[in-house]
Length: 282
Image 1 (tube, rainbow, N blue to C red):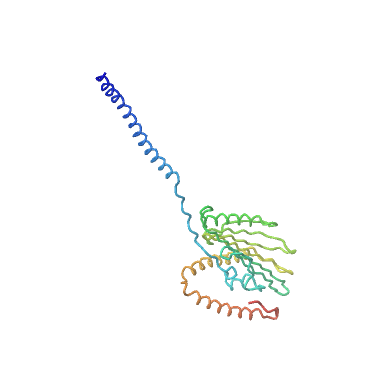
Image 2: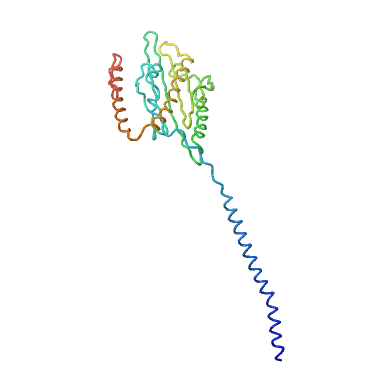
């Protein structure tokens, strides 16, 4: 009896050894697999989130004053006897994003009748947006829409569109005729894009009281001349903002105010003619 007890103990001890080894082996394998799985899972998560491409910054961050974007001499040539030489600004909630200005005038030529002219220029600027795309891309899309809209002008006769070379990065000229107030009007609209800015200029003319209708060629030349100046003003405004130091802002504003006052006096003198005694607004 005494000899069998130790023998039984040794048998039980030997039987327990494989069980422990199996348990240890399982726990060791599971730990290794867990680390591998965790590593592969984390690497999979990291690779599933690629970085989004950066949108190209907008070229222009501001717009020129529409009413001064076209030179005074050009306004005098294209819109003789303009009612308001300084132009009439269109409504806008943010002039750095959208703005427009228009001029109109009736040039009385006595027994030869009268020539009427009207011109309008509009600017639209697009910022770069991560969701919507770059400013240039958005401007290109709007440029196409404006061309399509112009060609579909209600009542337009013989509408024709063609590329306009040498104006901005891309431009389209649309010509057509319209009958209004019992007169035939000749229209030329140029839609152009430079960077992230779209410029649309419309110029038209008509003959009253027996005066001849302006030729389409003259109207087209006038429109192209004016929009080239408008496009240049966009570039000029961007350059002015980039080169002007902040410390000179007050001085520049004072000089501009002084110049505007002088221009206002000059305009008042030129408009004070026998044809019109109305006091012009500065």
